[in-house]
Length: 92
Image 1: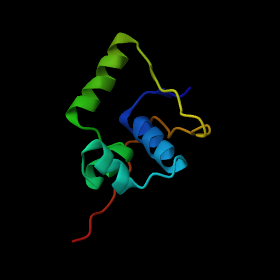
Image 2 (image 1 turned 60 degrees about the horizontal axis):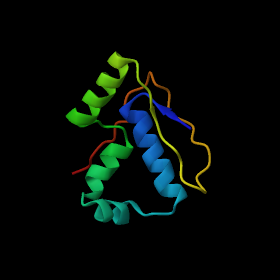
Image 3 (image 1 turned 30 degrees about the vertical axis):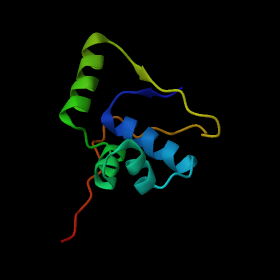
Image 4 (image 1 turned 120 degrees about the vertical axis):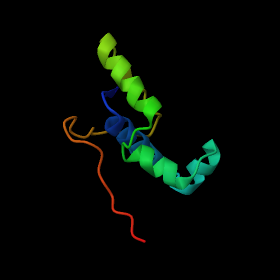
C-alpha cells in the first residue's frame, strides 16, 4: 500500500492507476466533471492550494496518506520525494 507524501506522489498514483485500468484521460476527466487539462495537472503533481495544504497538514500532524490499489493495478514506483512536479512547456 503506497504511502503518499506529496502532490507529486499522489499524481503518480492517479496516473499509473488510470493507465493500468486503461481509462483515457479525457474519459476520466468527463466522468469526474473536470477538464482534461486539470486532470493532467493533478497527475503531474501540480498542487492546488487545497491539495498542498492537505499535505502540509498531514506532515505537521505526523500522518501518512495511504491508498489501496484496485485489483489488477500492480505495484507503483513513487517519484523521488525531493523532486518537485515535472514542468511541461505549453506551446502557443
